[in-house]
Amino acid sequence: MIIVALLVASGTYAILPSLTRAAPTPMSKSGFTSPIKIGVLMPLSGALAGPGKGMTDAVRLAAMEINQTGGIGGQPVQLFIEDVQTDPQLALRAVQTLYSVNGVQVIIGPATTQQVLTITNYLDSNHILLVTPSATAGALTGVSPFVFRTSASDNLQTQAISAIINAKGYQRVAIVTRNDAFGQGLAKSLQSQLGNKIAVTLLTQSGQSDYSAEMQQVKAAKPDVIFYEEFVNDGIIIFKDALNLGLETIPAVGSRENRDPSFFKDPLAAKYMALTNFTGPTAVSQQGSYAYVNFANSFKKAFGTDPGLYTSQSYDAAMIAMLAIARAGVYDGTKIAAQMVAVSLHYVGPSGYLAMNTQGDITQVAFSLYRVVKTGTGYDFTTVGSYDPTTGITLT
Image 1: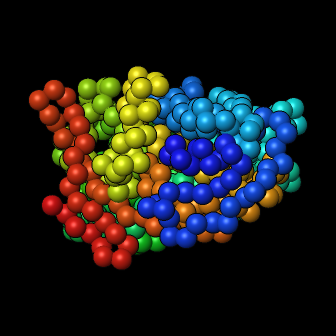
Image 2 (image 1 turned 135 degrees about the horizontal axis):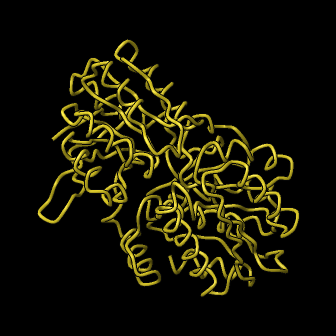
Image 3 (image 1 turned 120 degrees about the horizontal axis):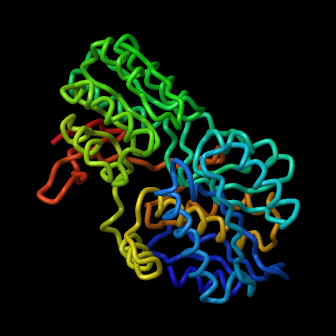
């Protein structure tokens, strides 16, 4: 990490030999004459405020590390952080301001698919590079030559979810997911893979204080498994309503977004997840890797907490973008975007090997399978298996 930062600071690009297959061509000079501006669009309030803070701090950490070694081409990285919650219009207004007022041509975030879709036309028109760490819907694949992501597409995630459901022999599946581009895409993908096993699909509106009517519909469908994908605040209410309706006897499956300890802040929601053996996929953990351990230690030293949901992906999004800036040698969105694939092919970060294709998706991904369990002191996640697109599912 530090060697990479030193090379970036000196205006060249390279990577540790142990982390690369073939080093890219070094860049001898840079055309940077002013601070390197990077916009950060994150949910610092609202439904995703919990993980949003950690994601923002991860971007701060990446910029801090680069700046501590001299910046990029001798220029410091300057972050412009905007709280856009999960609101597409807030994201659009923020991008417009960052570009027209601040001259920003590189952005990390936003968190949700609908936000990215809403701002894509503006990105294209003004040649602004965007790297999102957490917008994963299949609808984003190839949506723009300026949009990249450091989390796997949900087209891959739904394969893992379907594999869990099929391996357990469930025949009647209820889908409960939020009514936005992400949730709609997830439901559509699951429907295409599970076919007539889908008993009912409910698209929920975020921000409600009560979901008992929706969960009554789930109960009436008599499923033998319920699949969930919800924001933390909405999910807590939904799980409590499900518990009140006696749905804790029906097993539950979730997405990688549900592997968030923020759900445990409500004891009833946590109890529901444990009683239903709440199980889901998450990208294979890199927590034992050299890159992750260094990242986690640096993160805790800087911010006093352990990394959380999408923090490592946010760090990697910022670092890959900054390496692409260094490799381009000029602060120009088009030229920086053109370097993203080449940089990613030689990058291994705390969230793993992030080789990207020209459609903006990472191509090397496998999943571990988590389950919520009750412990002596509360609730936690345990690993219960794995899924790989080439070898299939293993459940312990």
